[in-house]
Image (cartoon, rainbow, N blue to C red; front, side, top):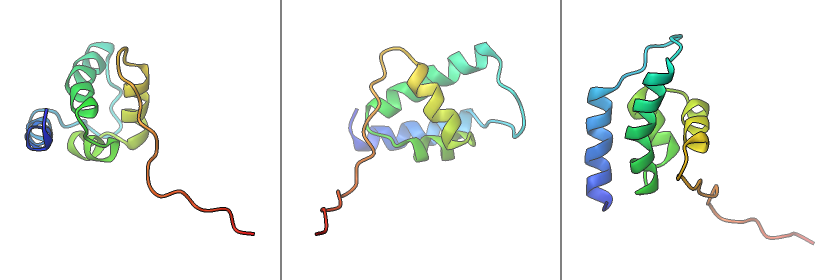
Length: 85
């Protein structure tokens, strides 16, 4: 998937799946969401983008991805601070 395909996937995900606040997801709903979110994450979408598109919290998406088989979690990124002496 290239960058444009990821953006289209996020837009489609936002239209198809909106999580209701304070609603516990069933195992079937979690499996469906994991099937939708995992390919987008591995293609380059961030957890924040996925949580915004689905209206799920950052922690919920992170936990869902980390427990999904075949998904390699990326590092935090950003610049590293140099050691000050």
